[in-house]
Image 1 (cartoon, helix red, strand yellow):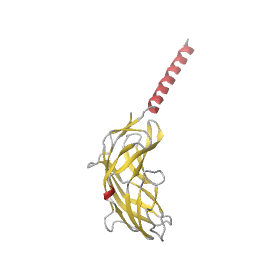
Image 2 (tube, helix red, strand yellow):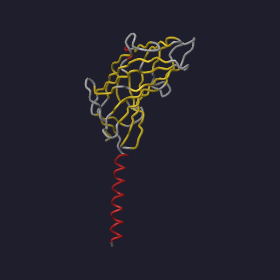
Image 3 (tube, one colour):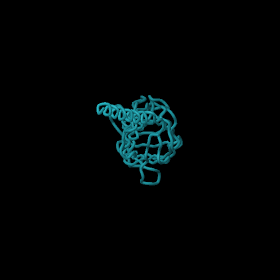
Image 4 (spheres, helix red, strand yellow):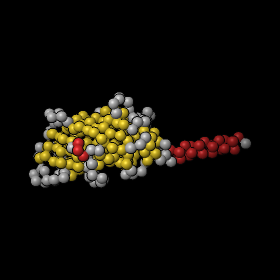
Length: 211
């Protein structure tokens, strides 16, 4: 009888564990504590194929499309509505200009890392972003497109304990729109992790939950 009771308890425990895992795996949406956001990089780095780089402070402001976002690849997650890339003399290795007339830019969901429900990062693609960078080899225009080959990738880093978004790591590669370096189009690499990522006009971090 004792053996049967122990077996029954083990089965109940296993069933409960499977139910918990299934619940995490079935979470289809991401819930955010705020739709308004602000991120600051110091610096954002643009590197040309030869290894030379321009480093500029960058500030972006925007919003999530909704307080509940679907975990569906390429679905619209929000917009970047304003930004600034370096004041004169604030960049090193060159200069950078953000083309504000191209705002707003789109952001789209592009997956996550970690084990549900404890995801550690959320990836987004940024399209429409346009910057003009003066590199040692020439001045180049770069425009991020809605393509995995010509994009800016934003990785939202999440603390799995507090559920807060702590920073954004920028990545991706973009080919210049025109011949600009030694008469050639070049492919530049974007990198850098934000020094601040908060709810717009506050010091509060955004909390992300799976629902």
